[in-house]
Image 1 (cartoon, helix red, strand yellow):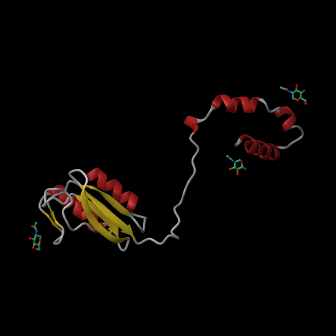
Image 2 (tube, protein in one colour):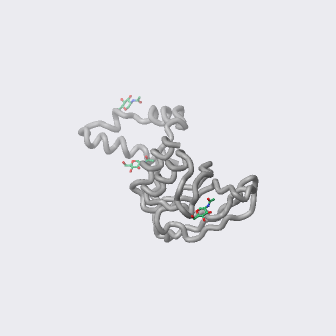
Image 3 (spheres, protein in one colour):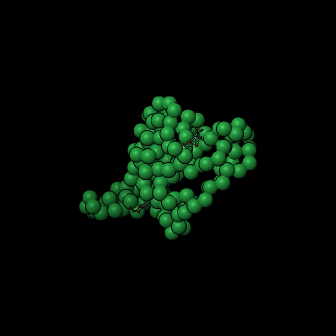
Length: 156
Ligand SMILES: *[C@@H]1O[C@H](CO)[C@@H](O)[C@H](O)[C@H]1NC(C)=O
Ligand SMILES: *[C@@H]1O[C@H](CO)[C@@H](O)[C@H](O)[C@H]1NC(C)=O
Ligand SMILES: *[C@@H]1O[C@H](CO)[C@@H](O)[C@H](O)[C@H]1NC(C)=O
């Protein structure tokens, strides 16, 4: 639990809207009093309070009516609505609506997966270029530009 909380603390620190959901297996917390009855639960509680999170689940999430193990932690006003729904295993479904406007842009970063590259085709493609002709009479900068331009004809 300690290592996990350390990591979550690191990842969530610079983020304004952050929701963490999961079965934390921490039954020994009184959520209305924000007090804990054992050490691991105390660690979770202090992670929550010291990182600006609040815990949003208020009713049992298991068939055992005392059991509230599945938690939703969020910073400030991120959660719009939360309902604990029907049992789908020994857990109940938790519906969460977020109060994040649609204009909040997700930052999508495209990363090439070199492990899955088709090196046969890449090598064939590279071998089909007459580099001597291509680079004839060019300086290094121009060669670099030209090299880069080759990728356009390579992409589908
Ligand atoms: C949690 O604390 C509240 C307020 O002090 C109390 O009424 C309630 O019985 C406690 N719940 C448990 C499970 O101890
Ligand atoms: C590349 O082109 C040059 C001159 O245009 C030619 O002499 C050479 O044989 C060509 N190389 C290949 C591998 O085709
Ligand atoms: C091809 O090179 C151009 C120019 O550097 C670059 O902007 C583009 O992202 C490259 N395309 C791919 C698929 O790597």
